[in-house]
Length: 206
Image (cartoon, rainbow, N blue to C red; front, side, top):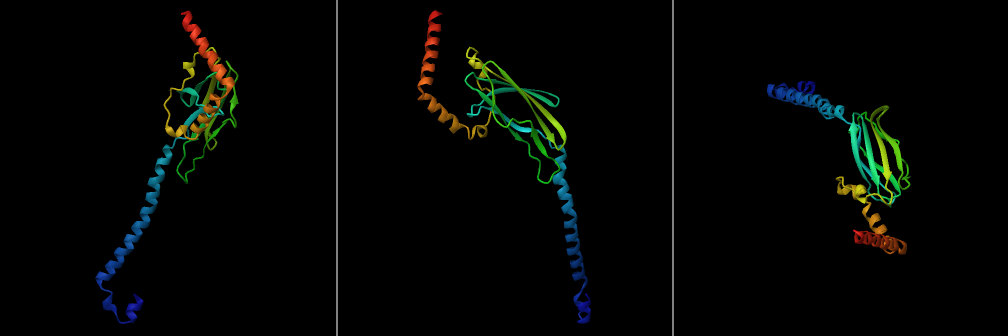
């Protein structure tokens, strides 16, 4: 404005131009005022964040999927698993819910076994996983996993729970390789023949 006056160009700074400058100023100021409001709108749902397990699987060290069911009472979930008699180990595979970047939430699972646990035939293993958000406990999972004996009903350990293709991703090649190895193992073949002969004899007695 001062430069315009010195140049004798007062007429250049008409009412329209001054109004245009004011409009531009208020547009910018309004934009700067809306930015914090936008951030608040994004961060507002963080108060509803649930720190918990997003997904859970039970697998053997060879990748075998293990059947389990869950019952929840309050902040405690009991996980009951059934291992087939030919599955020797079990390990929980957990995936945590992820808070939005920049939030104060720190969702972690404590007590997850570092390696697969061995379970003898007819025995049971128990352990607990605690979900914490910072220092606060948000949920507790009590695991009770039993391994069948050779005389138990195999239908009880059959995996019937719903699962996604993503959960099997990475395990299928491992399981297929082990299946092919078992198909050419003489000891496995003998064991299979014995089971078939035993089943045929039982059917004949009936």
